[in-house]
Length: 107
Length: 121
Image 1 (tube, chains in turn red, brown):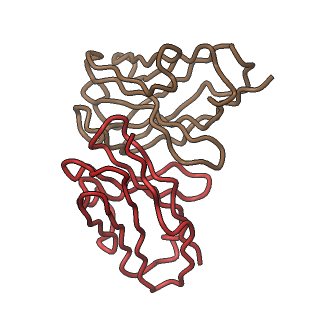
Image 2 (image 1 turned 30 degrees about the vertical axis):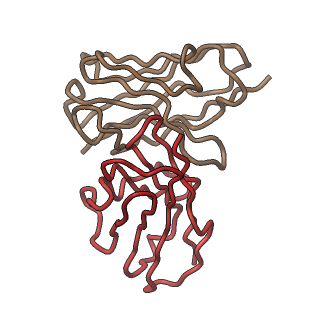
């Protein structure tokens, strides 16, 4: 199983700042099959990024994804108040697909 | 606009059964792969099962294989999850999720609001 470890566990930032969230895989993720989701309290997750760097429909361009192999990053260029949430990474390059434990972005 | 509404959750004793339903609208349900993903309280996400649009491909997480069955009724635009031999560790919010693509791509978009299943004696 490809274990995903997200860091940091919590990121304390202010609106307007840049956020960089890391996700490290225990094995190389084939094909760049990597996604990011956002979840706000009491809500369902929302797809942000798939295929490492493709933004999902309706996702603002302040969200970007990058990486390869075992190291992937979600960057939020300038935090908006609605961006404070928990973010999960997911790999789907190997079975079973796996999720990270989440990074909380808080004010 | 895609709309997924889960139902059927509740409190059940260990060893008992429960069936979840997901009513879909806003897209052509019969041409899309569909998944169930769950989230235990305060925990991360865990993929549970997927069913292709034509029911030809059906896959399960090892943790539920042999106990859970995913099915669909394309005439009713409804996805189901039959959960048997429930365990305390099956306690979670269960999300009905549309696959990003028509075929199984393993990318989840969008998600329903979820239904809570509590397994407790």
